[in-house]
Image 1 (tube, helix red, strand yellow):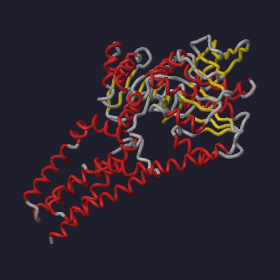
Image 2 (cartoon, one colour):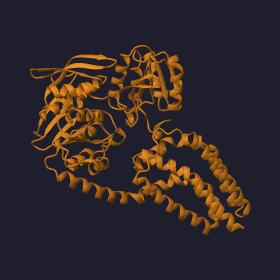
Image 3 (cartoon, rainbow, N blue to C red):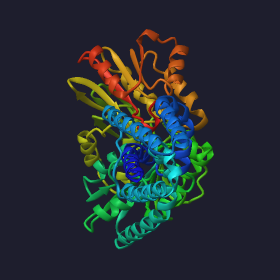
Length: 526
């Protein structure tokens, strides 16, 4: 009877571990499969998670004590009952979850699941072979999945390195097989994806061009694009390059070898991993420093970090800017409306009028960088004017859209101080009542609270109603609103994005405007 009960207990433990394991994998994925980031996330969220799961922690302790004092049938029966209760609780909790970014079952995650299953089978065998471990059955279901991620990460790391090396080698072979391919690299602390989309819209008017989709700006994202999408018919490859560690841009430059490089911006992004602003500046500017002698660099001269960098590479460069009128490509006579922008591009003696559906100063900057590249490639002003006028808004980046009949400015993929400030400027131009829904900004290191507090101060006069998502992480924004004298009766703090939308549907009118500013992953939304 005891053997049968042990088998039942082990089965229950494994069944109960499924949902905690899924959540552990989810958080590991959102922390980019990096054990250091995963550890930091657990450290920062440990107290909050312990409070949220206090009932299960108590039940785990009681189960362990009962299993130790009564290792026979009584202890096993109690453990079974506790696990059934835990399983029911997990199922109910999972049904209530509304994930912002669900777990994506990539090949990497599937390999991690295989390793996790093997580790659990070994643990189950240990429970059956050594009866005194039965008291840890609840621990095995509740906490062990989170701890096993360290083993999973360690075991799969060399596997992933081998897979990555194989794919990279194949992608390099494809690139090297087409020496005539024009490769454009784009990097920056913000504005990369929008600039890439604008560049593609403009360049594809004259060339058969491919761009990296969505935010495929890592070695594996770029590799996947090359292996699955790049064809011999393509003449231009527009490649977004991201970085959150020292050496990332250097690695990507050695991989892709672009002949044209664009640096859209430099600012305090990913300070948790870069450490210092100087490291960010040096790494981003490798886009220019590593260009070939016959290459072409494009630099945003509105950005002080870019402007003050002393380039060592003698490669040809041009500058662009909106505020900096000394830039070689700059904008004059700018007119903003709620439906778009119009301006003159000034380059030497040339003064060319452009109209676009895109909103805000940041998008004018992005257009100017694409114009500089297009002119370098010999694209005529007529084609550029047509492309800019027909250009579609970039999804989730100052995208004006209708949702349920309400006017939204969707800037959900923006997460930087400069872009957020510009989004508020765009919101301020809108008629009627103006709402902002935001969870704030993350990954800004020690300056994060200061930057979010300043973000709060900027809202006065630009937003009428502020909806903050997540009490803890938006506290600095709330303090900034207080400092600015914002009417705090017009500030609402809610726990989830779902609640925020529900509030907006109840309070806003169709003629109002709602700015969605940033969209945190589940790991950071609290």
